[in-house]
Amino acid sequence: MSNYKFKTTNIRGKQYVEVNERIKFFRQEDQYKGWGIHTDINMLDGDQCLCKCTIINDAGEVMSQGHAHEVKSSSNINKTSHVENCETSAVGRALAMLGIGIDTSIASSNEVEEAIAKQQELVDNPQVQKLAKKIDAPVENIMDKAVGYIKSSTDKTKAFAAITKKYGEQLSEKQVAGLKKFVR
Image (cartoon, rainbow, N blue to C red; front, side, top):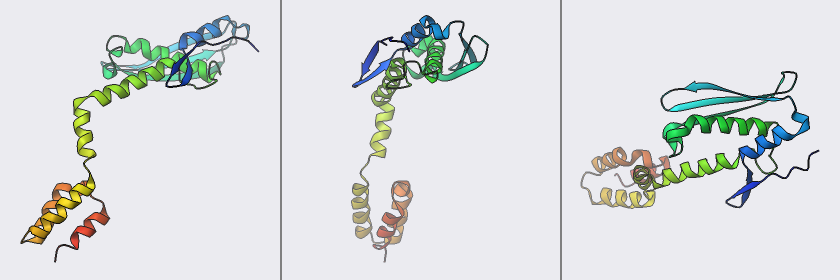
């Protein structure tokens, strides 16, 4: 067993091994002499890439595989390098499936950093923020408004219909049943 010490990157308190460390280990260890890393681009269209990496032993037998998918528009780096990132991720995953550099995680630091960056891009996106505000609209507030509207209306059936049409998807069956009690 090797005494190789993987360099790691700390991301949010957890240590991740970088893909280059996994490759370096694979290439220098005697147990992997004559083994190969083969990558295939399984899909490449204008905006997406799907890559498969296969690790074969010196007899040509498949020992592990890893897959990755990247979208060109998903990050600033991917705008110019989504194919390269996809291949790197697939290689890192195939080496991880072989057991290299997985003491804390199969994901490499590169994958985790990209995932965090994608999450942050979503958080910072004005359209996502607008949608989140709609989704997070307090249902209690809607219920309060709905009850008040029905109580103040002369045609309570018509008011109930208007509310369920406007807010129906946001209200549970129990809430709709509760509003029906005000329609008499």
